[in-house]
Length: 522
Image (cartoon, rainbow, N blue to C red):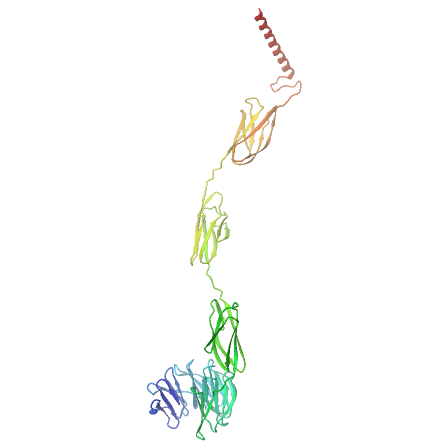
């Protein structure tokens, strides 16, 4: 039996008459009987496509009824003697237990095709889906256990031993427990969906078969067909609570962070956030903190009679900042000339025509180092980097430099007028028959030498002169060199002859004076 929530109809399988009765839930009247396969047993409603799936035990197929038209639209072959069915709304798969072939057929509710067959234990009968852990629980009549199928992988992950001949089962989604009816033991096994362990066995009347859970009052209703009674079990009781502690790492001290567990949000500026929960499986999510990535950001924790600790790691996000090339391209310099650019405080040099820097977006200043003999345009400025590479053209222009020169004058004394003399300055020789020799030189220090003149000594004969933005004069003194008696003077007359001539001249002068005096007296 199953209920169609979209139209309010109840669909009841009639094992002996090979049909399904449709009851209007408002009037409680049978409004239709739909022929299906042989010996219809289980029924299941898919709220997504509005179809009702009916297992037919003797025809080993699955009748698919359109809930809008109440018409059979397909009969899908499954395993041998199909019995129960369970629906996973997450992947939209229908799981059908096949009593005679010891397996479970998996049908895709979108395509209505069998996509997998899962082997379980002997004589699988009932099936139920747990939306908390996404497991499908299958009762195996002949092996006295329950197979647990992972709905994500469609693999059997456990076989839980229960009582004798387990058949019907029902889930209490509030406490996360699965209730299994054991036909031969007159009891109901309680399985904790978090641990997949039997935690209790509840005694009911003999010959119990089917069970259903009412979420409105949290009651289980167990059908006892042998004695014609229904056992009612309350699943509500005060549940012990245990700490669920979330501990973060990676955030600066005092940073606010938050965790939402089972719909309840808690925040803290310390490294721990605590909740208190009874046994069960609970989903959680961690709120974002600006500038940090989180692992894990969400998940689930299982509380099972003890505290649970969940670590949360925050990692600071390193932003990837794009960088761009700022190129300074020169023209005008001779090949191989070294030049430099300072950009945003960093100086790079090159002997090629290009100097490059890398930078993020922004505005930056630059200046070009000067080079003697050249003007630079532009010499300095600013560069705006805006999401692309930038090239700045720099032009060097050669400047012809005029060097100012100053007069260096050498003045001689001591030489007879018209005597030729010479001075060599900085490798250049100049001669003159006057008393001066001049040169024209820029600032600097220069060596000189004065040539010899026969019969004269010269002082200084050599030295250096420093020009400092002004004319320079250097006196040069020639001195006659004295000669011994009998030797010729510079004129070629011996000294004795020179003395005689001098005496004669003096005597003639005296005689002339006397004659003049006598004439005046007479």
